[in-house]
Image (cartoon, rainbow, N blue to C red):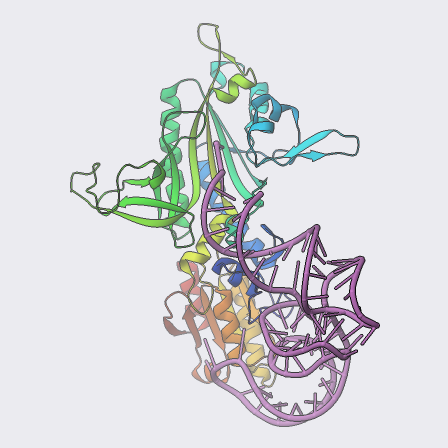
Length: 419
RNA sequence: CGGGGCGUAGUAUACCGGUAGUACACCUGCUUUGGGAGCAGGUAGACCGAGUCCGAUUCUCGGCGCCCCGACCA
């Protein structure tokens, strides 16, 4: 990708109506565009990041048997009235058509997925079923805030599972928990599986997956010795208390965190609402047990920026960076050899399957470096008169600042070995 | 939804009851070239409506929008 052709530009200053770090940096970098409070469009670089996050989530969901679907965005009001959400859940958007017919858009999609599953699950032999989608969600929040971390429109992976027995549900629930932790690890985040309230339909606990960040909206208590972590909303303990779950007498610390996923036992709430039954081994109509598993894709993107950026800009982990290499050509407009060398490097890297943003603009070094820091691609490779003379390119890792000098073959070897 | 704040070029800001200045960005030219360059010239702006006033971007009221705190977030 040529930076001179990229239609977005960086800017020095963030718009004054954005206070959150994630929105400031993402707008300055040209990753996103604000449409209105809580609603953002994702521009070429931002879209690439989202797609990479989605792909990691997709791979991990597929590994535990998830089958991806895509549900409708526009929904009839009837199923929402059937479950009580139309009048009972105040974040549900209500749309009135010109013929006065009522519609809504999904804020979570039990109302849509349950009837779909019911159509195909007729026998205990058809269970379990695990289906998910990655798509837009809409919530009529009274107040959007924190940039892309809490909007009225956002991207979520929502997965639903249907089971014959509680034991089978519990087995899958444990698998899902592990899959979630793998997702966050691959994204370069440290997430804690946090005990939280189970919501409206169960007395059981649920897990929220929390990433420690000052930008978060939740407060959690976590043990410094074991993996125990709990949302303060449901905890009767406090900071400094001894952890009751671990054998090592760990101490609880309190911290701000952002919820980037949750997994719920829905019991038979929805399968009963939609009279979804299957015939069990005895031939008796039975309601499946249902689970719901969410991951906030756009929120994850915001959390990654919040958690990993520094005072010069964004620092993308290798796993989600929009492109791997920022090829920065210095003085190429006045030195044809530099430009030719940069073009050659661009060609070879691209042919080796490595994604490259080539800063081929006629701009000064300071501006290019500042832009490079802001955009936050993992590896900057500089081509200039200096590097031509040295016969090696200057390679700087964005995250660590570590600098090395490599030939084309060394660079490609390095990137393909770690790719 | 309660409370607070803010709406001036693409972005960030200044001043002002007499129609607006600066910086960056953008366009033209020259110089410069390893950490957001310099000079010269240029394009571009008062959220909407009503009121007060000879005159409103400025004051008042209403609307809309945006931000923050809180509440809310099955």
